[in-house]
Length: 566
Image 1 (cartoon, one colour):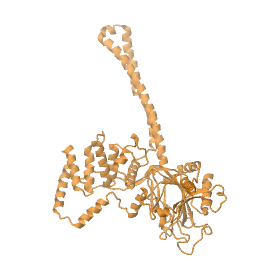
Image 2 (cartoon, rainbow, N blue to C red):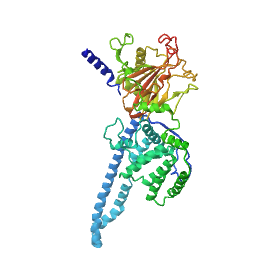
Image 3 (cartoon, helix red, strand yellow):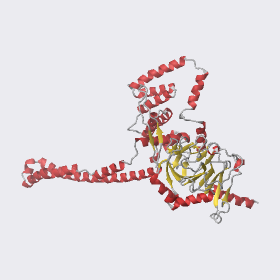
Image 4 (cartoon, helix red, strand yellow):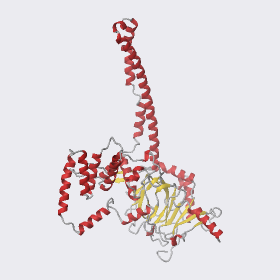
């Protein structure tokens, strides 16, 4: 019996040991901030920023090429200066010798000839040498590459992505600033550390978005690093304190606003705005103390403090979504867990799998979510990525009213569509999906390849069209999305889980594995328990491909039951 238990344990480990585990995009609101004496006045422009991780990799190599070009330019300048230096040293010797006895020196006809020759010819050559521009190659290369550089909007998007990760994974500014993110090596390199100017810029982005909560956090981190002795030529404590005092004031914390203002005035007693703010804050505090605070005001303040940093669209579901992304709130009891198994699967002795059955693992019991391990080879996944990269565009969703595909602020990734006719590998994957699921994929959508860079996410959504969306997928003419096939084409160091907010399930990405579930009951009714989301990628790069299988063609492959939940 013990031996049998030991063998079963090995079988389970075989399946479960590993399963335990472009572009940036964001939207920034357009605001013209009030022109008052309190504000350090910054404005912002509405923008959509998206740099996929594949494009980010290209940018890294572009920068490396530019650094090499810059070094060549420096060597050319150094060589030029060396020639000028040797010329100057030679002339210094001659002019020093001649200046000791000018008449005697010039009395020698050779010296007189050489002086005239130098002034007439050699100094002109030196002038030509000094005016020679050896930067042409570098400047030309830089000009060509600059057209592919990120713009201000992209930098804002990257900052917003960092703050999105900060909120979702409950990271403090010190953790991000030091580069010691969950899943990263314990020792951060200098390139992954945020300096004072970086923290300050993050605070300014938040300020421009009227996000005073994050403004305070990042300005406080910048000030902390300054006070710890970090040097900065671009940012000083006065500018940081100016932002800090205003951001905490906007959050209703008059005492702290006054404290930061006094600290600023200690450094710069003549600061005009701070002097005005000091009087205003003191007046407001004295006024506040005279008013009797009732229970309603106390409750209002408590709620304001609790909701600090939450966006206007904050919903209880977001709290559940973020908890699941952090690995919290998974509602799987030990008893239910005991009913989940891993097995070898041949889909009813399908000819393709009789000799080589698949590794199938139960991820969830109700609704049933299963994972198939080692489904696609590394070579085939790389070919899919290669085909998709040139076509990556911002991912779209189906408009619930019109059924037309369009972009949405809550889906932050880039995607491309690949048809079976485009390459044998795509056709091979489609046929494998049909063989495994037993469903007809001829009416399915093309294979969608999506790339999520750092901060990339897809907030909670349904894959199927609801009853209040009568036109969803009407253009396709193949009915609703009956099932979803999700293939993970990369491992992710941290973050990037697929979470099901209604049932409290979390599925971790594992390269080469695919997750499958039905979106509809056999009756055709939508299964609302399948509402799911793609968590932000905290560390790494996430590649997935989706196959959405539709109702048409499944009439005799998945028969209806007698009840709507059958």
